[in-house]
Length: 350
Image 1 (tube, rainbow, N blue to C red):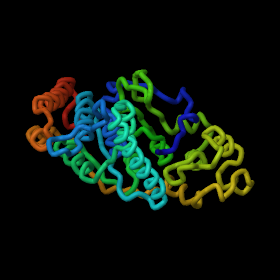
Image 2: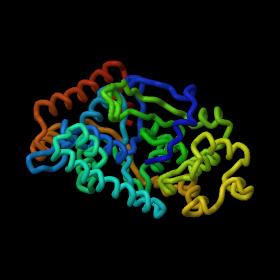
Image 3: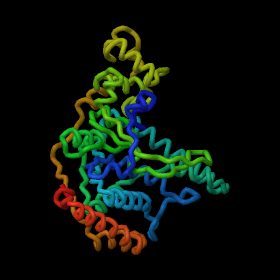
Image 4: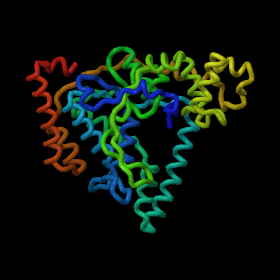
C-alpha cells in the first residue's frame, strides 16, 4: 500500500523526465515493488500470467529482464534492493493484503468460468503473489545480467533510501512515497511502468512518464521537516497503521502538523486521540527515522553473461532465444556506444 501523499505533493516540485534523461544515473529500485508491478501488468487477456512449460510463472522475469535491458541500453545503472524481514508492526498489513489476494483469486476464477474476461483480468491482477522461488530467480537473473542487487535486513525502501543517502546511488525508484519518509534525497516514480497504460476499468489509455521528487524541495515548499512529514504520514496511514486516523487525509494531516508542530503535541492538545492508533505512534516514527539498514553491500556492474542468461531464460523457462539474444545485443551495443562517446566502461561500471 505505502503512504498516500500525492495530494500533498505540489506539482511544481514534480519534475517530469524521460527515461533518456536518467542516463548516467545509478538508481536503487525497490525490487519487490517492481516485481509485483510486472506480475500484475504482464498477463494475457484472461488474466493468466506468462508461464513456462512446467507452468511456472515467468511474468516477473520477463518484466525484470526487458525493463532492465531498456535501462542499461539507455545508460541507466540499476541497483535492485530486496526486502528482508518486515517490522513486526507490518504483520497486520501483510495479513490484510493476503486476505485481499485470496478473495480476488476466488472472484477471478468465478469471472473466468463465466467468460467475463475483462473482469477476470482485473481480479487476477489483484491476486498476484510473489513467491520465494520467484524472488530467488529474479536475483539469479540479475547476477547473470551483471546487475547488482542488495539484500536489505528489513524494508527494501529503507535500504534503498540509505544507499542514496550514502552517495552509492543517485535516486530511489518506487511507486510509493515511503522512500521520502525513509529519508531518500530523491525519488523517481513510474520508471518500471513508463509507457502507454490503460486506466483500470476504463477503455482509456494514458502516457505514463517518470517523475522525480526531491525531498529537500518538497519539505521547503511545504515548510516542514522530514520528522513532520513522517508525522503526516502516520496520520494519513502507513503500512504500520494502514487505516490512519479516521477522517484525516493528507491536507488535514498537514494542517494539524503545521498548527501543532508535531504529532506528539497534537496528541497532547487533544486534536487527535491515542485511541486513534492501534500502536504507539512513536514506534512507527522510529521505523521511518531509525530504520534497520546495512552498510554491508557491494555495488558494481559488469557485462552480462550472455550464454548464462540464455540458458536460464530460454533453456529453463522457455523464453524466445532469438528475442533474448537480440535484447542482450542491445545492451552490449549500448555499452559500445558509450565507450565511443568517451564514457569509459570503468566509469559506467562504477
